[in-house]
Image (tube, rainbow, N blue to C red; front, side):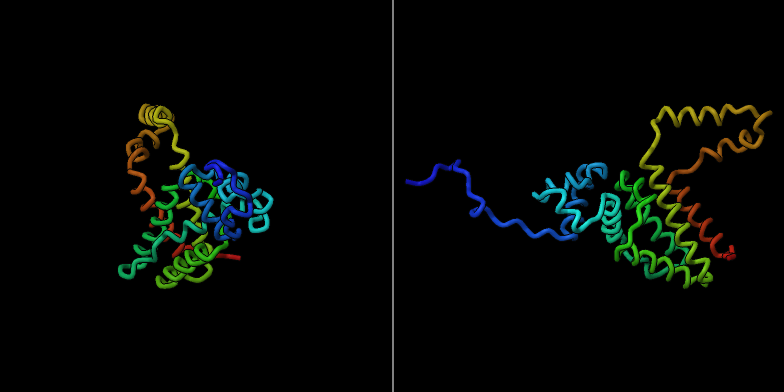
Amino acid sequence: MTDRPDTPRSRRERPAKAALTREGIVAAAVAVLRAEGLPKVTMRRLAQELDTGPASLYVYVRNTAELHAAVLDELLGTIGPAPAEGPWRERLEGVLTAYALMLFDHPTLARSALTARPSGPHYLNLIETLLALLDEGGVPSAQAAWGVDLLLQHATATAAEHAAEAPAEDWDAVHRAVQNIDAGSHPHVAALAGELLSGEPAERLSWALRALIAGIERTAVTH
């Protein structure tokens, strides 16, 4: 007599679960991020995905903040290398733009990236690439070291602002306030109302990165 089709299988007959690893946990976290957003990337949610208990994950990842930083580092690996040809400033802007666009694709991660502290290999590769380009341009080492932080900070903040985009009616209110400003009390705002509201996000990001790069070149670090 054979078993009924719905007879529960014993634990001994079930396929063995894959051993937990930090790499596997981060890969599962990235999958949840892509499908559901960063707020769902929690230890409890990953434990469900990996068919284990939350406590088991803490052996490999100390807390949710470290997990989110590891997810960010993993996605930094999707950024291609710097272009091989062209002026160093344009290539540097290209790498930073690619970084910002990666965050645009994951808006909830962009906000977390403002405070995340990645320390993995992809983050270090990105820093090395940026420093190499600044060195190619003859930027003094101290200015390059501080400048990398400034450049990534601005690109991250731009992506985070995009992630927390205000409702259309809020932007309409801003436009009306600027366009209808009293020139007597706010002459500079009135004179530049059009410019204040001009430009696409990509244009503004490009201009800001070029302005920052130029400033980093010319501004000495004083200790």
